[in-house]
Structure formats: C-alpha cells, structure tokens
Length: 354
Ligand code: MRU
Image (tube, rainbow, N blue to C red; front, top):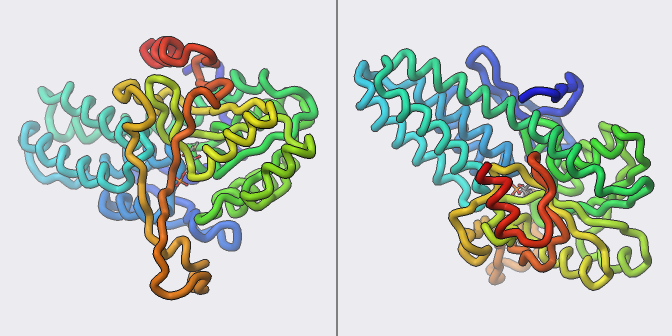
C-alpha cells in the first residue's frame, strides 16, 4: 500500500520480527505493561483464547503469526504432507474464538498462500508463510490509517465522541479502527474528545481505551455503561463510533456486548452511530446478523472482579460477549476503501468485492 506513513511512536500490541513474537498482555493493563514471548502456535492459540491479545484485527494478526509458528515446526520434506499438517494447525487456531471473522480471514489467507504454492519445497513454503504473516501485520496498521482518513471527515470540529469497548491501537496491529478515526480527526487539527464506556465485564473501555487515549493525550472521559443515555439526553454526546467483530452482507454489525443498547440510545436521541471496520471484518457469506456466532464466555467474568466475589455463589449467569446491531440503527460503515451508507447490501458488496 502506498501513501501511508507509519508513526514509530504508535502503540502496537504485537511485536513480530526476526521470527520472534511478543504480545502486550492486555489482561494486565493499565496497571502493568508486561510483554509475553511466544514461540509456538499452541501458545498463540492460548493467548487469543485468554485475551492476552484481543480485538478483531489483532486476533487475525496473532492467528497468522501462530499459523507460521506451526508451519515452521512441521517436520516433513513433502509439500502435500506439510499442507495436511498445516490445515490441522489452522483448525486449532480457528477454534479459539468464534465471533471475530478476522481470525478466519487471516487463516484462510495463510492457507490459500500455502495451497497456491504446493509446487514449492517445504523450506520455500515456510519462508513464504513468514512473509505472509508479516504482510498481514503491516497491512493492518496501514489500512487503519487509511480508514481513519476516510472516517475523520464525518467528525465535526469539537465533536464529543462516545465509544464502546476498545477499537483502538490495542485491538489492531496499530492505530485502531474507531479510535483511528478519532486519531485522524485530531491529526487534521480538530478538537475531539472521547467518552469511553467502561464496557463490562472485561472492561476494555476503562482499562484499554482510556489507557491508550491518555497515552496519546487525546481528551477522554470514562463513564459506566449505564450512563450513556443520561449524557445523550443532556446533549453531551455528538456521535458514537464503535468497531466491529463481524459485519454481515446486509450491514448488521456484531460488536462487544452493549453496542446494540448504545445504538438504540443513539437512535432515540438522533445521534449518528458509526461503525469503523476494515474490509477483513465484512463477511459477505452471511446474509444477516442472525447467522453470526456469538461467543459465550466464562461466568466468572461476571461473578468476580479478578478474585473478588461480586455475586452469590451458584447464581445463574449469562455472559454473551457480543451482540448484533441491526443495520437500520447504523448511520454509516467506515472502511479503508470508503464510507458505506444507505444500501448496505450493495455498498458492502462493492467495497468488499473490489
Ligand atoms: O472481546 P474483545 O475485546 O476481543 O472484543 C473486541 C471488540 O468487540 C471490538 O470492538 C472489535 O473487535 C473491534 S476492534 C477494532
């Protein structure tokens, strides 16, 4: 990709060079900034499952690196045997989290590279797959910068922007999607402030969004999830921007649990509700959001805050980690190839099919 600059100071949750991979343990932020080393695909799979690394694009990047680790360690001279083993490794990585389609997108890209090069030696396949994982990593940050530039035009100077969860640098290879739009607006000279929902139960808003915006010196105010309606009714929010884990062909959007509630509140208060996501988050194979698999996570995330018990022993608990916002509540979907609004079926097919 041309015309994009990489800021060396940007936050990047995954370091991948010289065959080494480190990930910032997002479970410990903001209290501790600990980098963990990864050397094999099973370790990367566990990092995705346990949310050391999280956020749809970052999960895709991690999966690609994990797939390469797995490929590197396959012991055979036969390309056909190599591919059979590689598919098994990709299946293990694919079973880590179900909702973010970027995971499956990245693994499909790695597999399709291997499949297309089966006439090469195993050594060449391994080298090629390392380059493919590197390309997925570098492209992700560059397309976030492009996406940010596309979306920043929607933000007026002085805008007070509500966001839910973390769709920032920490959720991508760098720069972010929803927060990439905010960063691009700030870079364009606009005064922008962010209101961050804390995002129960994993607290991506208070722990991650607040942390990275504060580091970037972008004004940010933290609220509990149940305060957004009040602030909207007081005229203190001008627009909402969130990321996405999967967008169906008709523009229905799966994102962090609570996003749907925010979208309804925005509709009630006539506030634009924007979704910022790369093309790799669009799943044209699903007609609508009802077909998106929704991850159910451990009940411990609800009943406990770390080891502090917050609810009675044995209480019945639900913990769906995502919800689906119907397309009628979405004002526009911002991608690196342009902003789609109105007819999502045609518009998403156009940007994603290009
Ligand atoms: O469970 P998480 O933290 O992986 O969920 C992340 C989100 O829901 C993000 O909003 C989404 O992945 C977009 S990230 C650019």
